[in-house]
Amino acid sequence: MGDGTREDADGATGTGRRWRRDPQWTRATLVDTLLELTAEGAREPTRKAIAERAGVSERTVFVHFADREALYVTAAERQAGRWQALAKPVPPEWPADRKVRALVAQRALMYELMTPIRKVGLRLEADSPGLRRVMADGDAWLRADLAELFAPELRRTSGARRPGGLLDALDAASSWAAWDHLRTRRGLDVGPTGAALRRTLRALLDAAGTRGEPGGV
Image (cartoon, rainbow, N blue to C red; front, top):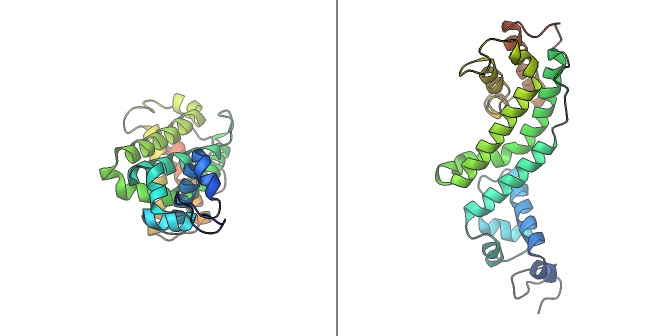
């Protein structure tokens, strides 16, 4: 029998009865545990590591997630919902320079949150159609957000939405890949990384003749 601290027959410990009767809570807890471990630096948390942190048996993890991909895809989807929720409406009619500042401030929060699970996804995507889909959906969301924000500038620029046009340039300059290159490869802190992205976005808008008044880095 479970005594509130030892493992019950279904593999749960501590809150064994809730593990049994509330499968949604159990799944959510396992997903949160995976995200916690990746945020702490674990490259690819194993089922055993997740079970130990959550206080359950490996069998409990298997009951709720048939394989590693199912667990990782669910975690990536949950984290995508969280970082997307950080987006706050920015009026497209604002001056371009003000929009650049607002965009980079939001992307900094988003990218810092998504980075751990994103890196796991990049390592596993070759064998995981589900993770490829989640990351592609996230990239599409970011691009659509960018296109909406800079819609006035894009309208004023010839061929802005064509391959290799202004939208592609803004998308690349504000991407997670650009952020991670500066944070991970160059070792920059968040502040200088944001400054570099703002500088690049402003240069692109200036080159297209759409930014208007100058602004500080």
